[in-house]
Length: 347
Image: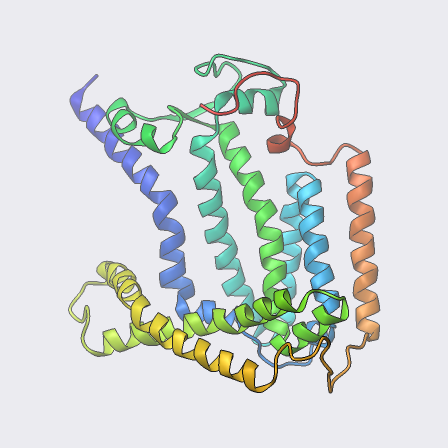
């Protein structure tokens, strides 16, 4: 082979490998940013339909969307993701929330797809997609190659992290199915976080008899996640205010942003640990777990909007059952599991 062509293939292969790692990071740091992540992980008061729903209803919605996406074919999960994302427009500053949610969906899809597609064994895809049971790991007769990793790159690096020698079209299909099934519950979960206070969630979960230890852990997590982004964002801004990367070119700003975020982890964690101490003191002064049950000033109630949403939830469950009976149940990456095919599924 022409040495120049081989060099070009190796360079392209490295860029292709880095794309899966860099694309989600670029979107996260340059488009969404720490400020955007903080906005989609904290509660902001409003009076649209999601804010009027009981947290129990929103938890039921998240669980149902997760279950429906898991037991139906991949495009159902895609439509659930896009449909739920469209409802972000009803939130406070809906257009911005919708834009942030769209970028989160894009970066998550690229990251999940690319993390799975290059490592799927051929035997797995042969059986899952075409029903062919093969035992030869190099057999890709029915698969459609997209890119063959050059030997210098593959042999010295990619082989050791589990990459298959040939990237196939079916592997991308496999990765996409995983991505959209994870995406649907992610989009729905953010609605619960953005439209419910930790206190509301605490009351709702206690209403359905969830153990108080689990409730406390979830509530602390809901309060801590936005604080993490807030503290990290402050640490990054302080570094730039001190002149960090002041003379850097625009393309280099991304690397300086990543460096500032990395070095800002320690002061951000130190600040959060102080907050954890305050949380512990607050729990002690309120006699947390001193009595078996807690009392609440604000009762958990259901409105007409809750009953409407539970009707929608019921329709989704019925749809999932009908879809499975009609042949639109879970497909590709579940199909090879538990089958009678004795071909190895790893290699």
